[in-house]
Length: 304
Image 1 (cartoon, rainbow, N blue to C red):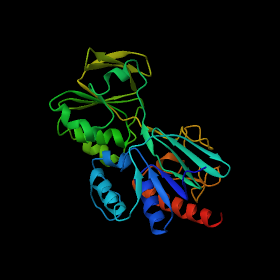
Image 2: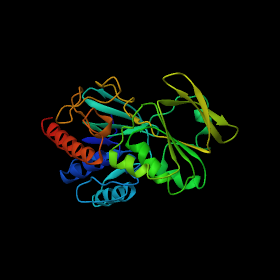
Image 3: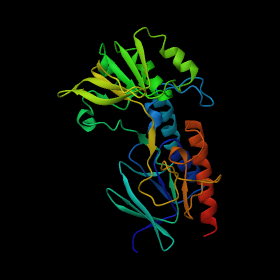
Image 4: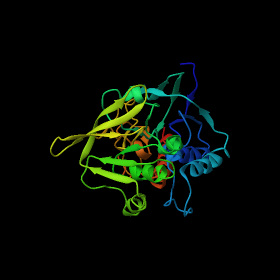
């Protein structure tokens, strides 16, 4: 093997990956970061009110603060690159991306999560044509239009709150009978007079020609269906971990199983943040997990 073998390669550069990178740089580990972007899902949050030190900051602003801290160190970042596979061969990890092949003595997987899709016919067809998965990115495009928000958690209510500044009628469709979002978010969202809630319903069809023109809802209790006219659909039904590229012990939902030191079932392979089975998916927790993963990787390398 004539290609360089790094001590550590960090996959992903959201809150967990950024923190792991800062800790690794401070410990003088020979490492690189491979990622498709910087900031991860944090960038798409309109408001962060529970990150210690900030009473209020937007996700984009917090991600910028993270990047500014990251830029204080001379860290080599391979971006944009998408990881295709991670395998351990003769005690060395082989990381294959869409652009190159890398080798390392240890790996931290901090690739986060990706939005869950609706799973209905023609979903791919309408992406970018009225169907979106990011209210922070696309809410301003739906000024004075009727929109459907699918979901009942914090991300869905966050989307509603953002859309109240732009949209006309907002329909929130949730498969559950009761919204799961924090009470303060529900209260804020429902202060908008043109918000209507459709509990115990799911989207079964997207209507339209070239662009979204509406949806068909099906009641999960009695099977009855209704049509809603809308020019936009915001899908906020959670996310799935970006872990399919690595063969390691996972939960049934695909989350990488880690112990309290961010160790996985594969020696030398660590994982941190929302891609793991760690309790609660929060920015502040992901940062702490990234720090733990870097410390664990450092201790592992000392023993090699």
